[in-house]
Image 1: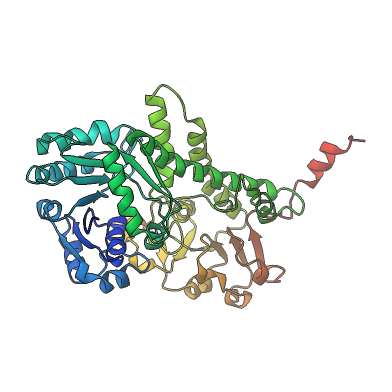
Image 2 (image 1 turned 90 degrees about the vertical axis):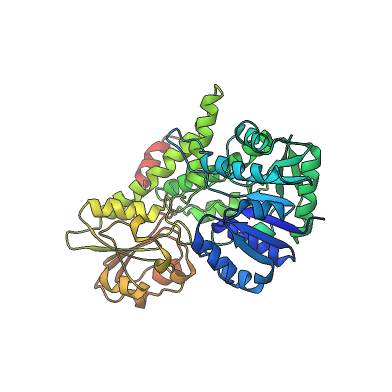
Length: 455
């Protein structure tokens, strides 16, 4: 049984993996190029913001150490996870430049190692990347043969920012792309020891695992976009309610309820780029991923629809408050945030915009529009605004009541997630707009005309 792991890359996922594995009683050596990250880990602190990460690292600090020395980490561990950035390039593909640099250092260390060591790529890559892009680097630098002298797997994680620790330790399944049967068997045994819920392990070729990872993400975004399409249609039907519809169809086991909530579009560092990448690899292989590309286009159009609806209630004197700036609750990440996109559109129109997020202090000001005034509390936003957008379903916004909006004589609240329906509906000083539910100007007349001759 493997007792010591090394993890290359101590960002959100890497640091969380290190903490999770250590919490299961194993030794972990982390490698990173950032001195501050290394110092944080070695002093028992989280190098990044993530739910429960600080506490988990502190509780297991005797089993975790960090270094910048690849050789130290590889020679003193039995299996290495590589979780470094694979950013999108100008083609829409995932760049291997950081992974390639990491594999060179690992290869050099493997040259000095006599025992069989398994290297596991966890970063998201496209089909062929591991076998044809990275494996040759390991063999060249080590002077050894994969499958004989060392092992190689591709095993991405299915996690969400804000719940990485939980998701890593309790996955629905583990995905193992293996160069050789021996490699997959070793990694499967590792997962059986690390993961308390003992999930099923799906072992396959490197390429099948690579396409499985990116295709799973694009399928989820398709489901989200389908729900958002339903929300738009339900708003136009008398009595329409997207939650009623999705609650019903989600009971069908072929569909399921998860990710079937009509709201604002998806964002984050993974979902948007995965659709683009799938389109890229399909074209390179002489075919098309039209569904993935269309999903991406529809998702990018949703913020424009929200902005267009807001323009009907905004005046020259209006101040718009956006509650929830990150791309999702429990995260300070702003990558592809629909809220930030909305703020940019409104600011470009000359609208005064204020914002709040429970993790505002951790957010990078460089990623936010200069003209966006980020305030310290929900109350500060509501006191300034006559138009409010609830952009994420953060628990901090679920407890708001009509009294919290009393600073304005009349306020419009656009609730993208319908979290305050019971609190704000039918209040005389609030124009409550729940996205995905029938508005006053439904298409009842259109429906009557469409079906009036049915008899």
